[in-house]
Amino acid sequence: MNRRQFIKWSGAGLAAAGGISLFHSLAQLKEVARDNFYDHVQETEKEYMELLYLASLAPSGHNTQPWTVKLITCHHWLIGIDAARWLPVVDPENREALISIGAFLENLAVAARTKGYDIEVQLKAQSSKDKEIVDVQLYKVGQTEPFDIKKIQLRRTIRNNFLTNELSSEDIRFLTGKNQESFFYFSRQGKEGKYLSQGTVLANKIQTDRNSTQEELAKWIRWSNEESKKYQNGLTAETMEIEGISRWFVKNFYSHQSALAKHFREATIQKIREQVVTGSGWLLLTSKDSSVAELINVGRNLQRIWLAARDKKIAIHPMTQMIEETAIRDELSSTLGIAEEIQLLLRVGYINDYPKPVSLRMPLQCIII
Image (cartoon, rainbow, N blue to C red):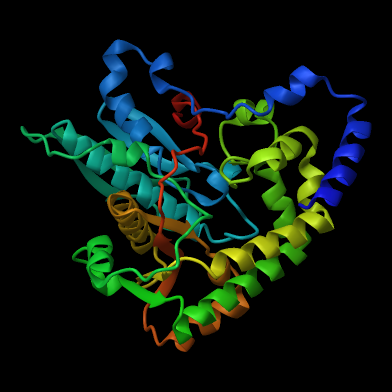
């Protein structure tokens, strides 16, 4: 937003607000913090509720946090998906939702091992639309496994300020670990990388031009601090990395309708163009098929990568629009020469400073059923 646009929109916003109070206006400058789950937990419940909280720090599309937890006993849970937090326009088959469940499970498994537990996971879902996905039981194994829990707590999506130098071969191997047959890396400067950059811009253009996609996005944007505190999910100005006076402006004057406006759509595409010309390249995650079990495994692989990335100051930005658009997805694998199904497309690159996490998290009582 340039100075002329800001003056125009701020004047319109003030008029529409009927003279918004200075106190309310300045209050929007305060960042909305994650809820502290300890404030709502009994002492006897703290250990396993902490595990659930750490699991809930997993990523999800539009930060919908689609998981539900049904407590059979303190150490026996049914993990499911809440239909109210599906994304039927961009994720009609719940592919991304199931990947999020996998990331949730990986967080849970890692956190549990630090407390001397292991988890046994049994698949329950027959289809991607089933409400109950996996049965999870915790059992004591007698020894703890060292892991820095802060890696789970500090994980975040980063969209801007990527450096342009290449990822080293060593760091690519570090990220992907032993399961390298499920990962493909393409340099941004290579033929495949340029194809992915151009395709990402095109797919985003298709989506921003489609009203149903923008409506779905608008539903999950929490412009004001009041909305953020009310829902504790979705996208905020902080997670979208809107900074400075622009953040103040959108928090005070933007509404559901703003995401449907022409200037917002145009600004989105301009931002995507700026993003895809930075970073090191693209990391693709694949699977044998799109079964529930395979998608959950993709999610677990994704979270393993994310928990490793901070150690190398590598930023991760999921940009899945090419996969979400059928016409583009159908040619993606053949163009890249990949036999398996591509499930995730991540823009990756080094970053000088890793910012703190800002994505909201719902209180545990909202996901426990």
